[in-house]
Image (cartoon, rainbow, N blue to C red; front, side):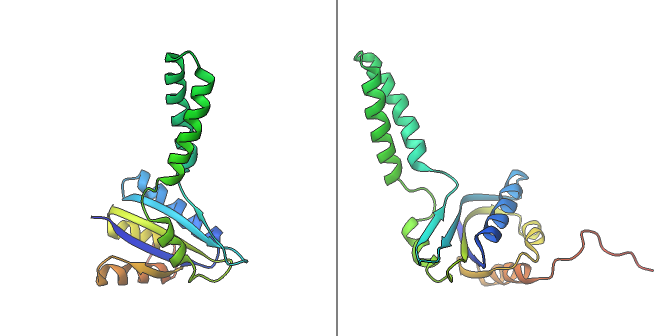
Length: 171
């Protein structure tokens, strides 16, 4: 079961910084993310999505490969590659992985201009380790599908003062 977590930040830079921290935790197998998208509300009110995977580019590359292969069979590899890339790009643009794009844009409209929202689709996590690393990063939870106790723990970690790495020794 995946859980959704949406955290608002005052700037795109801060949201990207927290996303990078979570992606590094994923490399340590502390958290498994299905998706991690930063939605930025620009000064003109438009919402821009910074996704991890550009589906249009992936579709174009895949389409070009398969188009070239089919083109070789019919002795027209250049035309096959062009048609394959175009159809792959269109297919990639129309596909949507993870969190629904329109949902993200609708929720991000609640963020003030210049602010950003970090959308996380959490597959699983080692809660105590993730919360320790999120301690003091700031942010406001906009949406969550976690149960109330987990949501409160996340909120407390986000707003906790960032302490020293090692506890001070007793004198």
